[in-house]
View 1 (tube, rainbow, N blue to C red):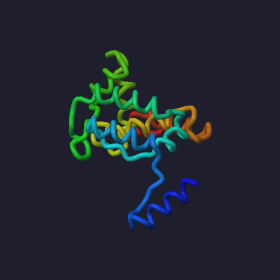
View 2 (view 1 turned 45 degrees about the vertical axis):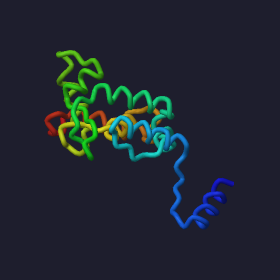
View 3 (view 1 turned 90 degrees about the horizontal axis):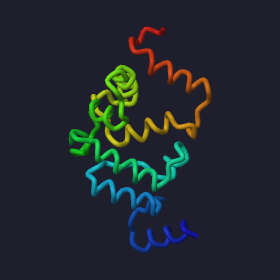
View 4 (view 1 turned 30 degrees about the vertical axis):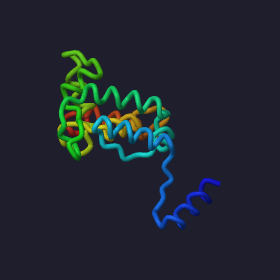
Length: 151
């Protein structure tokens, strides 16, 4: 039914349509209000992590509370390493482990994480992620192989 409605509106208005849901629009509005660039679909994240709209909203609010710098795409907030440690309550003794995790999650190697990197990291680390035990072992190895030497 919904696809039929989209087709009729697209034809009548001569505009492109998307498959974005109410949740996508609602989260995008919160992201815009928070100055965060948000480019993913809620349904996809929920399938990968088990996080629905409410959890993503809470995560976005927490991210915004801890992201003290605006160096991301389009001036969006980012977490630097110290922000990351504070957000996850890492102690001074845990900073080495925190650095390894932060470096792993910072996939564009910018030295900071935007909201998409945080959500992507949660998707990788989530028990809901569609990867097998071997993938998880390889992921853990990459995080803890801080020297990059293979042991």
